[in-house]
Image (cartoon, rainbow, N blue to C red; front, side):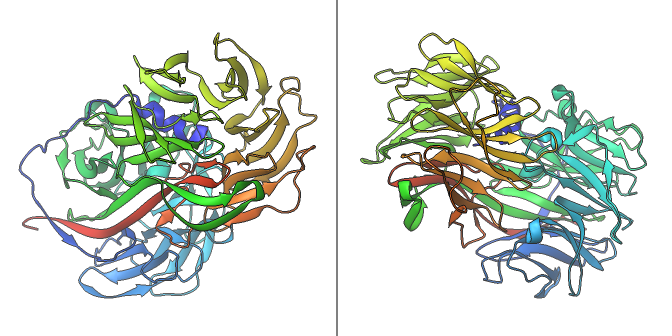
Amino acid sequence: MPIAATALLVAAAALVLKFVVLEPAGPIEYEITPLTFDSGQSLMPTLPLDGNQMAFASDRGGEHNIDIWVQRLSGGNPLRLTDHPADDWLPSFSPDGSQVAFRSERDGGGIYLVDAFGGRPRRVADKGFTPKFSPDGQLIAYVVIPPSLEGRHTKMYLVSPRGGEPRPFCPDLQPEFVVQGGTLVWSPDSKYLIFRGRRIDDPRSGDWWAAPIDGGAAVRTHAVENIGLTVPVQYPVGWMGNDIYYVLGTTIEGVNIFRVPIDPKALTIKGPAEAVTSGPGMKIFSSVMPDGRVVFTNMTATITTWSMSARADEAVISGDPGRLTQDLMQKFSPTISREGSKAAFVAFGGVQGSKIEVRVKDLRTGQETAIPLRGFSLAGTVLSPDGSHLAYRDVVDGKTRTFILAPGASAGRELCAGCTLLAFFPGNDFAVTLVERGSLGKTDLRTGETSPLLSAPGESFLDVSLSPDGKWLAWLGGRADGRVVFRVSPVDGPPGDPRETVVLAEADHYLGAPAWSPNGRWLYFLSEKGERTSLRAQELDPRTKKPVGPERELYVSAEPRNKLNFPIGNGAIGVAADRIIFTVTEVTGNIYLAKPRGR
């Protein structure tokens, strides 16, 4: 899993081995009614203020993509609003019901508007996600996620639905959990936006913030402290009257909807919280109506590791991919030995039972062994090329530490606290480690001593892969403007010396998970250069490492429900001689209505 994409998840998750179950403040009952009955994806409902119809994203058209649809809550045939090969999703209804804003992957991605009864969509903003109409219909709030996925470069904007130049909103705050579904939520009077985030220069300021649209100072609501939000997945989704609606939970135990009062003057949140939904399933992407009804997606997102036969030294794949494991625990950070006999990954089975472990799977016999983790870390598993050594991360005494499991050992040996092992050098005596955001080191695994290896002043190392001969580093660097640079650098050059570095790409789209072929001739990676994340390979000159010919697209899922990079930044791949393994998130869901009884 990419370094930058997991940093926020791991930091938040380190706090959460006690799961807080919020009991309703009083007897409250909701009638739950399904509104769609699709076998694939019908997700992300949104309603105008009258609550009579909804727009949603769905693959029900059967054309291997997601489009925007509209239907009345009372029933009837839905109307298809968009019809494009690229995915259209994350809709937001205008309050008067005349238009729908949405995110589209067409033409590089952006925010579009379409009339609610059909017509040609028009682009109103570039690169944006999670558009939200203000209740007065005057503005659309949205978030721009940088290609590097670094939170410090995630920005909020406001734009008029009539067009014009978007204006930055709260540039000193960064919204968090946008890639997990967190959105900007409007106050009923359109004067504030509430969101989960923090100050860019203060990692300890994570909370829900209420920020005025007129440019005044943002107010910290103290929701995290006052209502005990210790579970990582939690963020506001709606604001009606003096209540904030929010989601809380995990993919395994369930993500549910709650509501909690907000002081309309002080903008603080104290509780108590009341449950709107309960039970398993991910109740997210919700829309709240003034009368207390809530429409939401009940979604299943199964994160698995898939395997596909390949001749990796020739960048040729064959056959259909399939699951590497069959159980329903979520799988993260897959890694594979070079000859393909052994794989490892993190398996997550829930916070309540503290069920998280590193698994090592013998791909010849199918036998698995598990290493229970004491803390909560979803990244950092690395197999040595010969499969004999395993590096993994664990949280002990509140600190993330890297451990090495050597042959014959029954438990991992701590290598370092705070550093991350990225790759083993041939011979397994040394490793590439991330020392800090812009600096790589070469660590002696026998002594723990680290010497400088490569630095990138002003940038950050997002993903790193060491060539099979240990002489070259393929790495993705995050620039100060949020863009990504894909480079290959010699290992034996002076630290920071760029003279022999080869630039493979400078991208304003997501790139991730670089991995070498066993012969060092090809570099594999994930890319969103097209309209959906794909697995690609680039041939390199054996001597200079300069690209030879164009990059080759090897695999892109024909089914929109099978995603190679969802949530954004979760993509990962491992390359062996005879197969490629990669992360796939299988997403299905339908839309439900929660109606308070007696209303």
